[in-house]
Length: 68
Image (cartoon, rainbow, N blue to C red; front, top):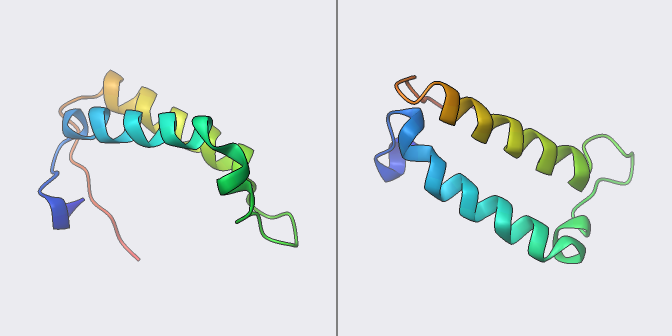
């Protein structure tokens, strides 16, 4: 998020919503990235993204940071 100037959760709502829309509109494209061992599926990722979006809406002033 820092690379694109996002610092608060409220700033994540629109881009994350668009990303979820893309994931849902093109499931086969993204299911191709499912790992062979089944750890972390497309469905899990979409669910995680929706959960993060819900949290961003609930806590719009939260500070957003990413780490590797």
